[in-house]
Length: 193
Image (cartoon, one colour):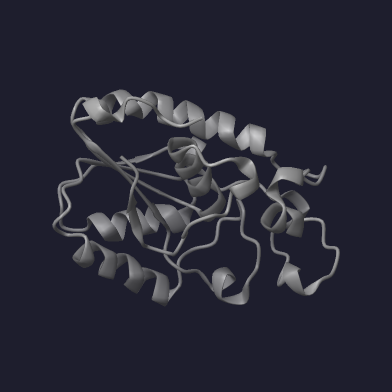
């Protein structure tokens, strides 16, 4: 569902994906596996701080996974911006497929449905998260922070590819079948409201 009545909003809501990791470079499915940034990812976060320096951010909310925390800390370095870690912003769980490398090179790999046909994705039984579960936790987060944005706070969310898309899609009213429409580049800031 799209967030309605944004005309009375005094603040802004931004979202950014964490910097690169070695698993990104190897095309391994990360999910909730706690992988740190690599040197390129750290540089990306520092470069983003310079690129977006003119955007006033009052508060950063980030995932509790180290790659998002490190991105937030590097982005906020030298600035008086509180960073609040929130478990609801962790990446979608891909269960037994976390750590799986180059899934698109494996014909019929069940996790590929998530990316190619999200409307028909059923998570693997072994620890995978459904879209309903993902939307429930990120929706709870958005419902909690929207009053702050409406009252004038400028908030940046730093998270992950699939998790970020759930927030973007909810706010923009993008249906599940089009889940992956739009960019989810590392350290690119997108204004949602």
